[in-house]
Image (cartoon, rainbow, N blue to C red; front, side, top):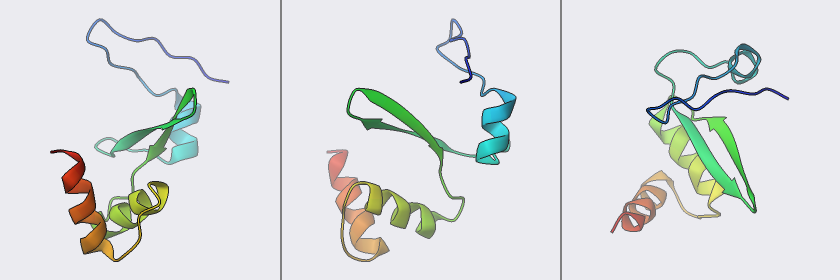
Length: 77
């Protein structure tokens, strides 16, 4: 288990062990996924196509990367 503190600006620092396990570097995108009553964080792949494929699988979307992207854009409306 690792613990971090929420700053007054609502920011967190990833503990060293978590950064190492995720192979996270400065500038990487970290996503937060709600699974039931808990939140899971994961490093988003740097390649946009791979990121869309990954997110599509997590959201149980089908189709190619373009279809997944179009579906996700609809979520923002």
